[in-house]
Image (cartoon, rainbow, N blue to C red; front, side, top):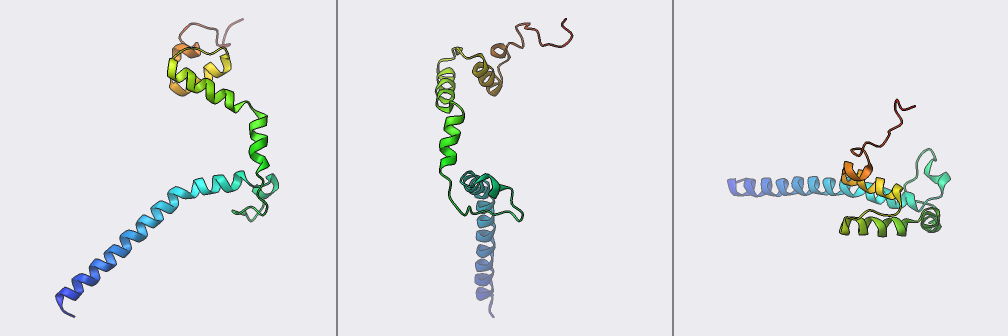
Amino acid sequence: MNRRNLDRSLSVITQIVIYALLFLLAASTLLPYILMIALSLMAEFEMYQIPPKFIPTILRWSNYIEMWQAQPWGRYIFKASRAKRSGTRNDDPKLDLEISLVSGSEEESGVSQGEPSGHGSG
């Protein structure tokens, strides 16, 4: 083997190793999202089976309907986007607290306003 062929074969091997590492990185990044979608379509008893299944036997699209019916998610999303955009307080104090905790603002959560915390107050 001459020097040129050796350099070419090392270059090909280096490219194969780089692409394999990039593939592993991409797969490890996408795997949690794929599992999240697969688990969201499973029946509850399938999620807790041992050995675990990663592909649902029956796709339960009704899980999404049940999720939207269990909580007013549309209202939460609308109010959170409106509060972030305008900076105004909402009429729902629970939602205000959630938004302020996410944004890290102590003023909106009532922490710095001297509201009783329940510790040591009689």
